[in-house]
Amino acid sequence: MNCRAITKMLTITIGSDPEMFVLCGLEPYPAEKALGDTVALGREELLKLPLGADPTAKFFFAELRPVPAKDPITHLRTIRDMMHRVPYTYKCPKGKKLSAIVPPAMEVTLPDGKKRVLSVGGHIHFGYDRAKAIKDRKEAKEKAKPIIDEIGTHEGKEFIEALLDTKKLRGNMARFLGYFAGVPYYLIEPQPEGRLRRERTKYGRMSNYREQEYGIEWRMCSSWLFSPEIAGGILSLSYVVAFEYLQMPYIINYTQIRNLLRSRSLFMSLTKGISPEEAIKKPVTYDPAPYRMEYGVIKHIVRNFYLYPRYRREITRFFGLIDEYYTYSPYVNIIPNW
Image 1 (tube, rainbow, N blue to C red):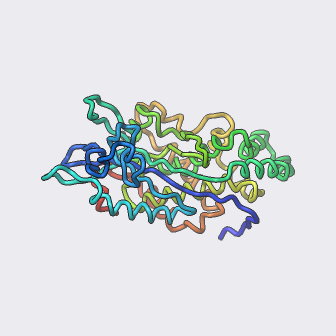
Image 2: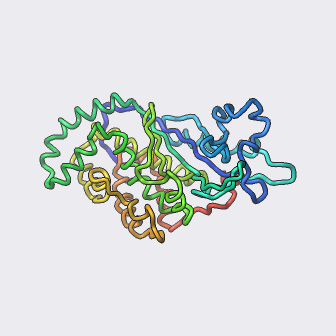
Image 3: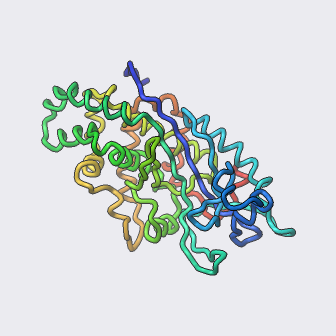
């Protein structure tokens, strides 16, 4: 059991807007049409609905907008309730059966007749008090100076200073999430659809994020709506990782530094802009071998993170899928899984 104590904490919320393709029969069907009378007042309604359609793809695929929560399990329960309502919210033309799929990316013909590769995202949102986070990190940098001075290598000192940096708070947080949560997710993502998403769309790279007023929107993962096990696993893992990064000023100590310094790739990602996704930015073939080697280190380190014991069950199940070399099927109807 992790027994480090935090005397003061940031409040961190987790939200998301996962997407999915709606199918009528065997063909992708525009979510805007499937919503039918629900949006009779106009497209503005699509931006307000908890079960709506994504405007960035001409309202082609469905998008869930669950209410943010203070923990990933509560957020997952909201998503589960919403998935139960999917068959009653989206409707197909008479005689055609409704289903939903979550390939990371797929080429479709849009209502205007143009073909386009669409990324089916599983963006995760983290909210926190940015002003407090910056203030606490500045104080922590001074308090951590004796620890930093005792680190034996120049590279290690740069690494710890990067973790406590305030100017790149959100960018470094995205890279931290990308390494500790994104690399494991890559290993269960189906190929070649995952590679297609990174090559043909603006989404899916390890440090992919967007700044928001409330914090950051982490945009590395494709849709994790395939099953509650995958959704609960990545939501819990990413929350634990985000908590570790944001609470670092309160929990930084020798043990934590030793654990983090085991990862050469994380250091490179934070300080030199080189990260494990370099190998698959524009790959000829997808080779999971280097990621699986990194995964062993990641799994060991994550088990020492402060919140890991609280979400051990969900993360262990998620890691178990990776250990079994599992990848989800991108073209199986996901509605029965919920």
